[in-house]
Amino acid sequence: MGNQNKGDVNGLKEGIREFMEAAPAIYMPGLSVDTVIFGFHNDKLKVFLLRFANTPYFVLPGGFIKKEENLDDAALRILQERTGLQDIYLEQFYTSGNTSRSKETVAKEELQKIIGKAQWSNWFDQRFVSVCYYALIDDTKVKPETEIFFTEFKWFDVNKLPKLLYDHDLIIKKALSRLQSDLDEKLVGFNLMSETFTMGQLQKLYEAVHQKKFVRTNFQRKLLSLNVLERLEKQYTGKAHKAPFLYRFVTGNSE
Amino acid sequence: MGNQNKGDVNGLKEGIREFMEAAPAIYMPGLSVDTVIFGFHNDKLKVFLLRFANTPYFVLPGGFIKKEENLDDAALRILQERTGLQDIYLEQFYTSGNTSRSKETVAKEELQKIIGKAQWSNWFDQRFVSVCYYALIDDTKVKPETEIFFTEFKWFDVNKLPKLLYDHDLIIKKALSRLQSDLDEKLVGFNLMSETFTMGQLQKLYEAVHQKKFVRTNFQRKLLSLNVLERLEKQYTGKAHKAPFLYRFVTGNSE
DNA sequence: TTATTATTGTATCAAAGTGATACAATATAG
DNA sequence: CTATATTGTATCACTTTGATACAATAATAA
Image (cartoon, rainbow over all chains, first blue to last red; front, side, top):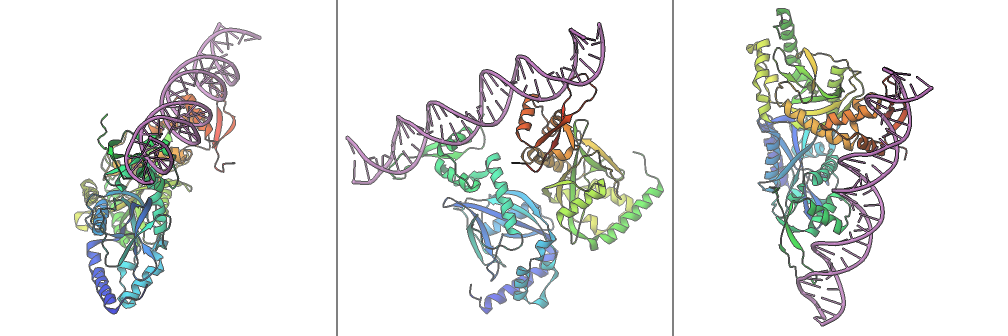
């Protein structure tokens, strides 16, 4: 909340100027990637967001697409830069290209404040079309990294989001909606959990994604009937009740 | 199939040169829109394609995005230019951005043949990312238009497609897959039919989209149970059997 | 006028899927 | 050894779905 000290601002300013000079040669003009990174902790579905400079606004992690880089590769690269993870489940779900979104003033004014209006280049001023991906990560393994424009990162409950810049709130809504379908149709939920889990934990995940409760016994029956869960040993937690089985998701369905 | 006469080639050449000179000022660099236009005739699901110059290859109707134009508006504009229709059901479903697709040689060589290698500009040589939409049209109302690069248009059965350039075959596959989901979840099929229709015609549409047969009586039960069909008068076709009812799709669901 | 034919609309039955509830099994605490 | 909390399975009613039967009917042919 407090102001940054002079040194930080100058460092940021220098970094941005450097980036802007190099960008047109390296990146596709007017094209970016935004990623909605989902995680699951404390029985809640979370989204990973970055605070934009000194504002109270947050944005999705994103980046630019290199001139000879596949879209999927760009998304993966940006994610790896942020999370340090290698294998990430990624799904392209939407491309956002309304001109109004580029007219967002808060971000521009803040950037201009940092680097000075005179230095303002065409790069950030141009209209951007953003290809959006969602990512599912087992966030017990993630080590987030900050980047030049955004110095704070934070996980937010998917239905307690902060103020967001551009149309990033809409993008998150669309991402969630797509995740809900994919959870049932492609069983992608396992990417949000650790290798083994109990039926109770799995149910909490489904409830967090679908934003509604399921009847425990019916949920168990349904998921077991899919024949994608391998039952492992029991998990003894020390609690005074029956110990639940652990499960693992099996891919190569042995039919 | 035959060669074009000298006059045509020169006209094309002039048109292309004109376009290439104007394009960088008007359009987003490296960004295009491709549209998969679905129609339904003779009980078959059809896709609208354009023959590329003098080659045996076809491509999806597409175009470029203006510098201050919304993505959806660009898609709609391109569709209206091609079909002459005003109200078109449009759905964005994928953005194609592998670098390999831009390395397609057939199209480039053919273009160079027409306009001359020396005249080759950066515009067509740059890498393109394409935002893909599918469109559903009642093709009894469509009056297709040719355009500068593509002089022949044709409807193709969705599973008897010709050779396609770039990754347009993949894009059509993805479009079909998305249409299949949307047909059930969003009931978009009515955009492919005329205002009124019989249950039999509707079933043919569903069979064409899902590429499988349905049991007539169960199909009827299912669609009537959705409460989105208004039963109108009977349709007397002059055939020696019971006349089927006509139906209309009702939007404002009176609950 | 009446039987015939092709097709449409509805009913029915069995099988599968789903929501709600009951109950037995069991790991630890006292 | 009993109490407690939670887990795993079974069961019942209800809905949905697949398959089949059958009555209704518009035109044709006898």
